[in-house]
Length: 325
Image 1 (cartoon, helix red, strand yellow):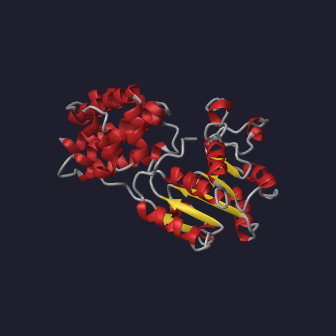
Image 2: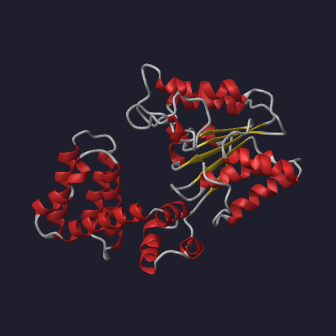
């Protein structure tokens, strides 16, 4: 879990949350909605800290902050990164973002996906109702759209009759796919991409050319900007993939396009990154080629569910070729 650093942007959201505390109007559940890497989890962690520090003196606040940063505070539960067989099995890595019980996920049949199951909700429920040390107990759950139908129904029952002291801080990347009954029982705060001027201070120590690239790639998401600015290897990888995507859109032959898209044949971060850069460059092309936009949208959608990735990639390359002739 990242340190309790200053929040970049989102002043209105922070003011609203501070006002809830000041007026004694804290809701039992908050839902932070917005695209990835805007800082929703950082705001949730900061708000949880503010709630858990109520009534604490200066010395106690320092201790509470250290506990929160290390996810050892008894009244803070976080469900973020999930254990997945052959994908994320390092408990030490998981412990950096999650302290909710997950041992059940490694038992047979082992969890293989990033979905939140009813067993995950039951494991949470077993420790949510214990006696709180302070005025509040906070439970942060990232991307609740990951909940399976049964898990969402079980979670809804908790939201319907929560203990007085229990506060849920939830995030989502897609508000539209959530159960309306869950949304209706939360106080929704919308998060939006930040202007470049808000991100610029994060890049003060970055080379000017790299800073321009990072601002372009982050699209107003401070989390992306911080990751790229602090990881030169990741930045170089993105630059390389961006070059591959540019070559794809400039290619004149179908076979050349297909070769450039080979990384997408297999699921993984390399495929996701190339797909991202293909879309970024397509949006930059003015005027936009409607047929290319449609072909790209179909590829991104079909890759989510279709196992025949190579065939989908070939179809996309051929469609682009026909559109650009």
